[in-house]
Amino acid sequence: MKLESIRVPIKNRLLADYWSPNTAIHEFFEYEYNDKSFEKRAQYLDEHARDQKELTAIIRQFMEPLGISKKANEHLQQLEQGAVAVVGGQQAGILTGPLYSVHKAISVITLAKEQSVKLQRPVVPVFWIAGEDHDLEEINHTYTVHGADIKKRAYSERSRRKTMASVTSINKESMTQLLNTIVKDIGETEFTEILIKQLVDTLNKSETFTDFFARLMNQLFEDEGLLMIDAADFKFRRSESENFTHIIRNNEEIARVVTEKEAQLASAGYGKPILATDEAANLFFVEDGERHLLERKNQLFVNLAANIKMSREELFEIANKHPEQLSNNVVTRPLMQEMTLPVLAFVGGPGELAYWATLKDAFSVLGLQMPIFAPRLHITIVTRHVEQLLREHHLHVADVWDGKALQLKEQFIAEVQDTEVKRQIQTMQQMLLEKYDELRSYLEEQHLPLDKILGKNKENHLKQFEYLQQKVEQTVLNKHETTIRKFMTLHNELYPNEGLQERTYNPYQYFNEFGPMLITEMLKQNYNIGNHHYILYL
Image 1 (tube, one colour):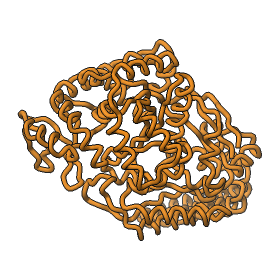
Image 2: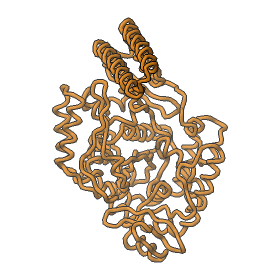
Image 3: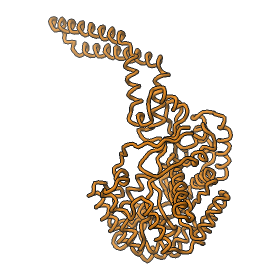
């Protein structure tokens, strides 16, 4: 395994500016990303320290069914004794979701280790599972690459209700069928048997999407002691009662400052990532596991589509007695994290960076301070086969991102086409067209009105020439299919769906090739969060 760090142009302007000094984006964040900021943030947390025994007990109880490793237990003890945390999170996707879920966890672990050394104090890694999210269509599928083809593979069960991932039961038969299809796509290796056994065993112990996700993540990162908590965990929600009350009490002001900040963000040229409004309550009401987004209208909190109307007093009562019936959105989730966890830094992707840029004043409204935002690591995995193809065609990964593999494919196709066949077909077609012109002139001289029939007849013949040309071209392509597939393999492995690999494929395709120790080996590499991209050669 070899790690290469490369600098490539960052297409996301906000992220590019975040890594650049003296850009407008920095005024939207409390801290710039540097060692001095970590020292200041740690000092702030010390000055605002709170008892973390209840928090630790909740995380421990959530993780006990998953299995608490020796390292995780050590981190729990440190958290209980006042350790600060590096926090990151993601939705509960199929087979951990896209690779960036794993990259986030690696980022959290790496940064926690780094800051533990630099600050000379315990810093624990915490993964916040967004089990309250209800967009199941976003998490119920994954992609595989088999040969040169990308295949979307989806869990077959569908629900019309917007139930949260943490309460949505898995149909184990349907999920097993999906796992078998995925394994068939990625092919059999020496690791496949043990991999499918592990997945099926884990599935059989799982009840919901979040459960399955959490168990897999715990298996992957147990040696690193990654702590996990589900945002929708009942006991966690119960502990947030006072925090929800705080959010409700300041609801109008939160909405106002976020809307204003987003307008400033747009004026600075960064767009409107949230589309905030002054009427947004930035909370969901949960009913029978289904989430309904609230807004404020005529002094009420409402969701008209779900026929939900409640007064502020009624919402306060829910926060006090049944906080599990409330759920956060993109605005209030970071606020809730700050109120519940000792967040030294939050690890997120480019999308999260954008909406966090609207929240600085919202933290202030609640008497909080925005933590350090740490952009996650970007990693592309290169298999041995792909590395061989890169060498064969004298390409680098960045060349494939720039479309050069597809350019070479088109160039190759142009070179192998039989130009003589094409010339002969064009000659035949031209001779036929000339004969049609002669026939049309003759028919006109004879006053025979057959223009429509003649035109249709000519059109049919031209279609046959076109069909013949396509068949010749396809036969030539079939003859050179092996070479053409190499170019498509490069493109689809490294730039699938015209985007980075980490946004499409799940990690199990690479476990199947490298083995179950892939995560362990990945974590042995020397990463550094910054404005670069890592290429990991297996």
